[in-house]
Length: 358
Image 1 (cartoon, one colour):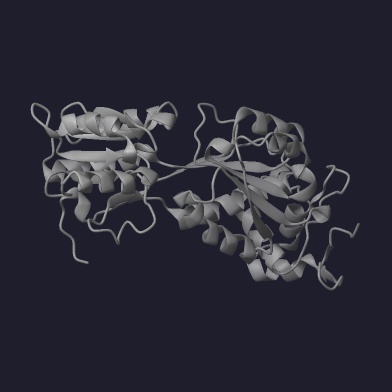
Image 2 (cartoon, helix red, strand yellow):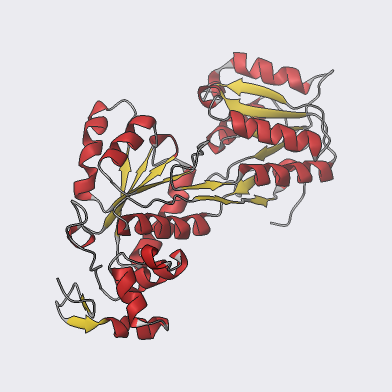
């Protein structure tokens, strides 16, 4: 192992002094040495400063000089690849955030890979314990972060963070879209438009996991927009051909409860929902308005461009890259876990009844 005054340049095996890196950052060589040797927390160096040192070190081709005896897979021996495990590659969130994450990891010289988890494939459960050997760290998306996966990763000290799944306790590093603030933004717009009768459209398969979203949205509509108590309709994913589901929707389009606006929780539901309404000669937004709580691909291109909440993908990816690499640096043993919530942006288009310029 090189002395504290030396670090290893990965590509050409030359030795450089920490002061070269320190000069670029405008900090002391001692500070750089402490960060690269995983001693920054002991000396009270801010996480933000640590992340800046590590990011530039990776850009310049430096590897950490952490004590190789500290972990079974020290930083220098890891393959330098972060894997994101997703439930489906067709998920609009996954499609949207992937290029941002690729760019973020490329900027610090780290590889990036995607693994699609088939919930019915039992082989995945057997593979979890071996991920530590192949990846520096993991990003778990949504329902992929189940109890079994988390327990297994923690037992192997595999560094990981979780995106778009909330937990009641702060035991994990998580980054989530702040649905409460998004619900308030939707409610404020509903109030501007003067709507009173609201129907929330949820997928029957996921209604239990969506209950917090439904409650936040209902509270915001009643308390901010002063609407009547929102009705909740549960539909099947394949409801396009299911006339039974349409019957329960249609009853809210007639007196005594005539819906002013449908608010759809999941972007995948929006296109079939709009198509079914169109087949029934129900016009959007002339007969009923519509807002989606998620952005979907091509929402700005359909016959009634869809008003929706847009997640802060660039900010999520930047924070995710910094957070997971910080976990890698601590070999998955970091004591302090961070929970980050980022507010989405309401993108106003024609479907809600607001006429916008193309």
